[in-house]
Image (cartoon, rainbow, N blue to C red; front, top):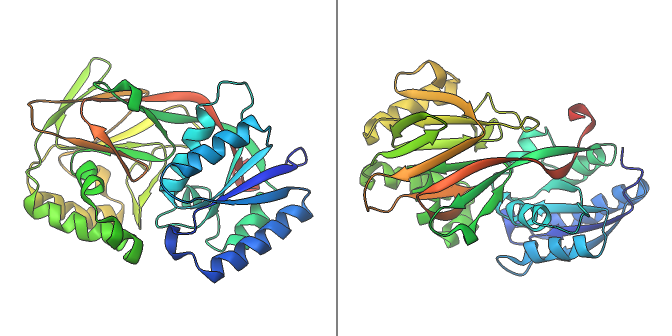
Length: 312
């Protein structure tokens, strides 16, 4: 339960998901709800990229008992990296109030999109330890980052790498659809090598899932479990943009596992290697990471997460 969580900081990205006065009213009401459960919250707004990581790191050093994130998947990823990197023995639990473009974790935890309603569910929740993914660019290991929900390489990475940030700020998740449609007609879908243990596969796309939800209405790695220490991987081998489009009905209907050319398996470590000198990109939690080669690895018990009672 949350009886030992008294001193919290609420990190809010005012630019995520539209924000506005409605968001501020929701946050004020959520803070009252947390206070009624004995959790006093201080509001801290982010001012730019990387600021959420700094606030989360400071919260750990100050001995905070809870960090509450209000923003999208990018903000949440920054906070996760600020908390998981702590080496001082004080691991601060994380909670989420949905407030961004995709909010994969909110879907995974069945949290309402309404901020006060989400607070009501969390104030009666339980703290659980979960694994995180760690993505390490092998040519630049200093750029390694943790991820909470999903990573990918191939066209998935290129879409995130190429997205127009101003367009994303205006239209949200529709910007990913627009960029995806563009990549179908101009991306060459080159193969890269996926290595898991002694298994190898040359593919044009890999999704590395910690969650069943991927983004928007899609569920891809439906065998993934946030509370297990494994990835579920999905790979496509086709190099045809039109073949990619043909997978959409199966994806929407939940029949992707039965489709030819689609591969699913589970692993704790995966390495993605380029087959030539052409650049191929990866993303984590909907944010650009780096060029291949990249290792994705499970790190058990890397994060404490406040979950609603149904997931306890």
